[in-house]
Amino acid sequence: MTLVSETATSRAIAFDAVALMEAQLNGEPQQIMHLGLVMVDPDYRGRGLSDVLYGLTVLFLFIRGGLRARWLSNVSQVPAVIGMVAETFSNVFPSPLPGSRQSFSHLTLARQIMSRHRDVFGVGEDASFDETRTVIANAYTGGSDDLKKRFEDAPKHRKQIYNEFCAANLDYERGDDFLQIGVIDIAAARRYLLRHTPRSSWPGLLIEAAVLILQRLLLPVIYWFDSSRYFGLLRPRQGRS
Image (spheres, helix red, strand yellow):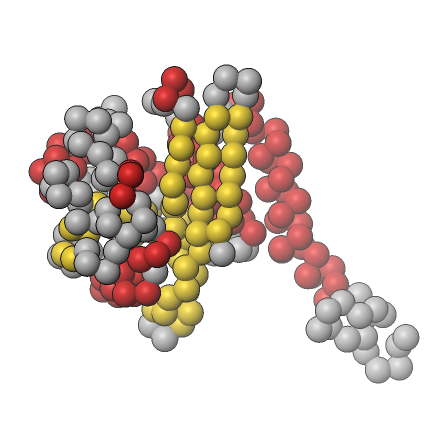
């Protein structure tokens, strides 16, 4: 399943897609949100459109999921994107930030993504995977061939730590990517709202969030206490019509 979001004005266009991938963790089914391709008009790069597109799409899915923490993934060689994911979401690996480490959950999900979902991000079967660094080597042979970049051409992050991290760990001539895995949770949602949401977007965002919270959290409680009507699987008490 792929969700698409788009923002546009008369002069700027940006587009991205979030794919939902099925996996298992600790015997429980998981739905991983994969941050897909982002396309931004070259004249408007570096103005935070990618942050808005990625963040708002994931944020609304998080709210629709009842504010439950959800795993997400990202495959990229672009320092600006690697840094955005590392700074916005929680428990992200790989990342140059202090405290970033690969847990068993990271490794388990990475193995499943690489074995079952390569087609989601256009990586061919001939690409190898370094589990320790979660680097996909020769990643641009499965449909994403035209997206391969030289390091000099890849959009840079404003913080040099991410540019150096990518340059040190990825072979751009061969065509390497990081597979980042992280979590969207309350802390990540708060960071995103404080850092990346334009003030002009707050009224609409708050209204949408309120509606989603009402739908997911309050309406089931209201339905539960109304014993006179059918609501999906809920049935009225015997003797009531």
